[in-house]
Length: 172
Image (cartoon, rainbow, N blue to C red; front, top):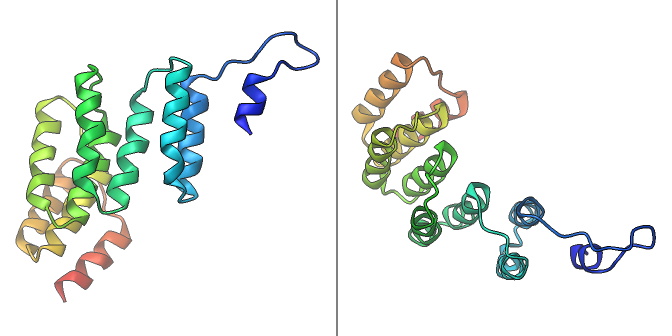
């Protein structure tokens, strides 16, 4: 549908509307939410046709696709591409990749990403800590999960009830 809108002149305006990076990010997000990530390739090709450079949002959606699908190592592709392009990862990018590693039971790599995040001057959010708590609980590292909780509280963050329940389920 976007192709019809953006490539055909409208009757009232004798010019073409050109899609922007925001147009394409909206499409990527819609396909991601609908579970139609096989459409990403087409959208990304169209972005190239219109010389739309990927921005932080584009990379975050691409990484989330892989992390949510249990393919966190594939998420490193967009991550590395983003860094090569000179785009500084933000807290959302870090949370996405840390969450991917923690879900894949690679909490050690998630912790390394957390350290990189802080060394890069990116402040963690409650979500960052919640992923690490989940990851440590899934790995059976209850003491470490409790240390992460203490650090989280020390920094003024609260814990979502669902994370607490999930942690207890992994412990039991």
